[in-house]
Amino acid sequence: MEFAMTSPPTDAAYRTTERTYPTRGRDRASYDRELVHAILDGAYVCHLGFVRDGAPVVLPTLYGRVGETLYVHGSTGSRPLRMAGRTDPGLEVCLTVTHVDGLVLARSAFHHSMNYRSVVVHGTARQVTDPQEKREALDALVDHVVPGRSHDSRPANDKELAATAVLRLDLDEVSAKVRTGGPNDDPEDSSLPYWAGVVPLVRGHGNPVPADDLDPSVALPGYLAAF
Image 1 (tube, rainbow, N blue to C red):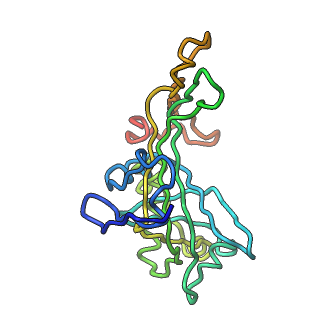
Image 2 (image 1 turned 60 degrees about the vertical axis):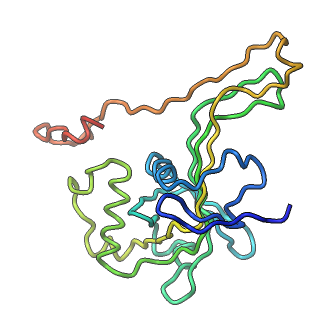
């Protein structure tokens, strides 16, 4: 089907483009900024896809969001960081984040599914060269894992900063997709003697376990106790 829908960005929604308009499950797609931000902020790992030597590569990595920008980091010697160097046009990427909220078990094998929330971001990733932005990006990466942690740990020193590269990816071509609810069995299968429904998946955090060499006088910080 030829792409026939596009819309400009608004304060509440991202623009739709040929790359962000789904060919299937269009009723599950959303461009709502608040929804996109919530999905991004609630996960820990993204998958960064790009083309290397003519072949696709997908890498799992940590990330952080500051406003309408995503930051990912890595070693200055890593291939994607070098490909998005300071002098070239940047690295074309596709970044994805997914939450799995439930296992959807249908009466037929064909209609088994998952309840999920996902975000797909298309764009050009570029290396961060401004020292202040780089420090703020690294703080955002730490705080994305545990909010408040960047102010309760030693900042990176000059040697560590020199060994670390940061990519920025602006949130421009972005879409979310969400599935909720139970199985979509065919009407003729409704009387089959098989259990059908949803097995919810719940993420939780266990009690913090101190490092073996932690000074007993160092108390558990409040932000981590609440976490």
